[in-house]
Length: 371
Ligand code: ADP
Image (cartoon, rainbow, N blue to C red; front, side, top):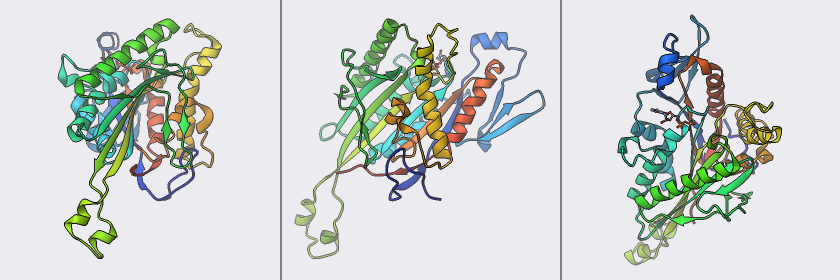
């Protein structure tokens, strides 16, 4: 089976095929749901041993879906990290691009899964913090570099969460490699784990302040963390030195080091529930359209890729332009879809599940980024 065309980039089959992996995480019932819905069973049942999810249709029937991983309400943050993010982090350390993304209705645990700092309760640390721990355990900062940018995408505007006065960020795409960069975004070198956690906290504070000013809820915007890892590794044996003329230690020591440049992108998406266009949630029609735009554009791109369609509408939104390498591109991508158990939200849960099912059909071509 050949890979579909990368989002907007030239088709190229020279990488390692890597399908988007999709895990489902069910959050436990909250206090309100335990009381108010006490008489009603959960709308989903997870069967992790057989990697199946059952979505209840009525008292007798349910639909069954298969996923790569199922994380029940008892799954620890550590286990979620190991299943969802660790393979992606390892790829980034090997010099690939990687994406970890959470999709689901507001209140189902996207931020808990990705962004929990866990400073008091270390068992609660989320994917961002654990990823950096693994990166810093592998990369020596004396000879290499790890840096980050932290952004919010709200109503088609990219805001710099590390410097709120910086509002001039545009997306630059390399049409050949499919790589996306944000040259205007603040890039900060990470010195140690604590400096990273401090930057995440600073970013959250800026996000809160920006949203308060705009009278916006953070559930309506996307938070995007980008971590750049530059790591030099010993040069590979060239044909000349290993097989041909001279295999002396002198020649070996002259081998130039290779710099591997992995990029890890962690995306906490806006809540997947659609905003009512009538404005009943206090949004104007323009706002509602703009807020719905990026997520529905992402859904359309994923559908097009899943169906191997010739046209992938990547240019329709900033979110899809930013993620063009993550779906149908050269990155290793892991998606966690978060759902709640409440029968009241069965409709939203069903649409989240369908999004995850389509994302599982997207093939990427992983490519080493080195120079
Ligand atoms: P979202 O980012 O999807 O809007 P949050 O991450 O803010 O959702 O989660 C909503 C609430 O549910 C928070 O209070 C969070 O602590 C709690 N929560 C989410 N997932 C879990 C979980 N797996 N275990 C315990 N509490 C959770």
